[in-house]
Length: 368
Image 1 (cartoon, rainbow, N blue to C red):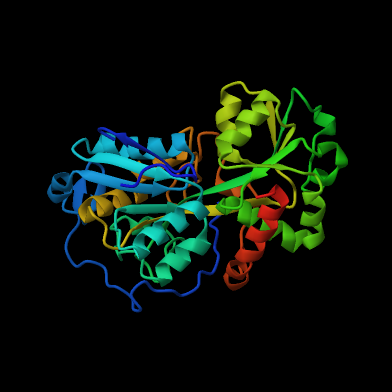
Image 2: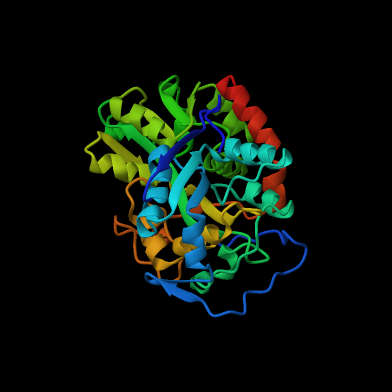
């Protein structure tokens, strides 16, 4: 496993451990043809089904996880899987999706195949990785709990392990309720200049927000937003830490999951869901081609797709991803995805084609 680097990729070794976003996904295949599902009978382990050889997985004894999630969330996923399978030693690397995808692409180009599972927060790199044959095709016996649009096309490369979405948030210690922004356009008020935060360009959700609001309001919206001189940060933890401390008055992309966590801790913050909708992106999980621990990788996908794994993803305070399983219960807040108006790309050719412009414009705005 690689060590830390200047992108602040971190690793810890841990012992022991609606809406249906019905977006048309480009018909991409990691192998050029639809791979058939296994003919063998799945095995029940704990309370879910798997095609993995559990005995071999325990002999492999290790799990390497690349994840876009914040540090606490990534660690929690690895710990939860490791707790259920204590003979498997888990480790991870976390970074924002863009940086993480660049890392795995560079490693694979150099002939390094160190990763078992890749979790991303943006369909653009997931589709690119699929097109390049980066995923091992695996048809989980738990896939029946999902609609076809929440599986890769063709199926077997990756699945949508949940949805994260964001609105606005503000510090109640710094901003009165009647003065708080209520819409995305309210962020352009000069009173928020030098007092607002957002994410950096490697964030999948930040890309979606830029793309969707550009569709609603045009390029002039982001040109005006840039004049507000927002501060960019890597993770939602940084954004909400600053908001809770009053270092920023407003967060321009406040993930609902982070809001719930900080609100439960007593932070002086409030969440706003603009009427025009909330940018949303799926979390995508798949087995990496040439995984060093292939049986463990299959076991993890089955665990993550199952009600057991989905209950964890949806209820862990560092995650709170809305589940797309057809039989999923509400989130801990009592809300379902269908309670929110979500904004997500539907024209993926246009979406994918705008990535370079977004990266250039966003980095320029943040002075990166």
